[in-house]
Amino acid sequence: MSKHLTQFFQQRLSKWRRWLVITLCSLLVITATAIAAQAEGTRAPRQVKFTLSASPAATIARGVAFPKNVGFYFTSGTVPPAVNPDAPATSRERFGDTYTQAKGTLQQIESLLKEEGLSLKDVAFLICYLVPDPALNGQVDYPGWFKAYGEFFSNEANPVKTARSTVGVQSLVNPGWLVEIEAIAVYPR
Image 1 (cartoon, helix red, strand yellow):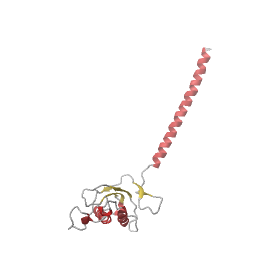
Image 2: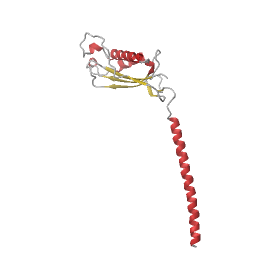
Image 3: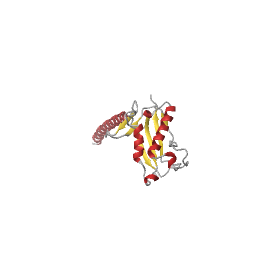
């Protein structure tokens, strides 16, 4: 009887081993397929890809994807030029309102990009810091910034809709500044 019992358990153990090996191999194949499918879906694009909003009226992109081995150009925080050099160095009168400052700052960024062989069409991401304007009861002038942005991006001359962050901050280094902008541009391939 013990010989039959031993033989019975060996047969069962052999079936369990086969089942276990088949199950483990199946799991490995399923996992490898899922990993390959996921990697396929997350592959870098061949060119810069702007993911636009579902709304055609949106002036900015939801995000930007970059190809492998792309070259980036990051500007430092760029601040407005003086529009009235005779006004006090730390005054709003020296630099203008939010719109004027944003426009002057974007023009300076345009010049920086030109020195690198780039243009505003190569800009993929902007960060704009805005300070509350004392002349507007301490409110941030978002419409002034949006107007200036619209003159440089998301228009007929430059249809690029950058990814963008606009942040209201308490202050900048110079009390007369209402705007500081950082840009990230991509070198064309």
